[in-house]
Length: 239
Image 1 (cartoon, rainbow, N blue to C red):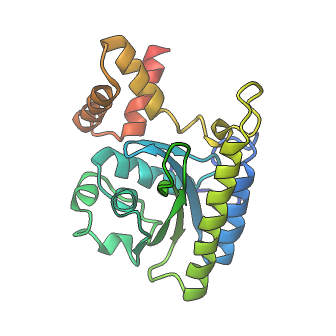
Image 2: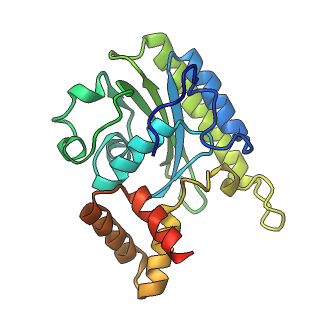
């Protein structure tokens, strides 16, 4: 997975991979607000559960790579956000080895990433009984060390609230017949391969979802690859 762009590359403006896929309105807004907050990179993730993540189309590829490492080892900024349901701040990712030792020991964290700010997207889902859950994350990154300025943090907090509302509105107005405004339209199919690979393993080996996922994770550790790399290879082999 590439962790750098060509000369003159603006990671907040260039969608990942083919430019034929236009990022959804949520990502366009996230990019705009990230720039206002002083970030160099931005990504959006959605969670269906503690172990089910999806990347919103247009997310920065370097942040996608970091999230893949985080998901593989079960430790890192996103895992901390999910565990605490609170914002996560990092002044220098490369000086924080003691915070997530398994992550730093297993993978080479992208050198471009220094300061991080992760903010939870919160909402009340159907049947939640009024409980507010974390269903996603807005991830902002700087290519230099140090905390985000107060004004940038304030902008980011407002952005997270607005983006959470946009995603919930999209979910509420989803048309099951036409697929209009479907949450599936947010997901980049090029990076959302872990869930599909888990399904393939479950079907081919008659495994429940949780066991199939653990099997995929064991394959990743055995081969020294991330979950995404392992899943992509498995799907290519099955094609």
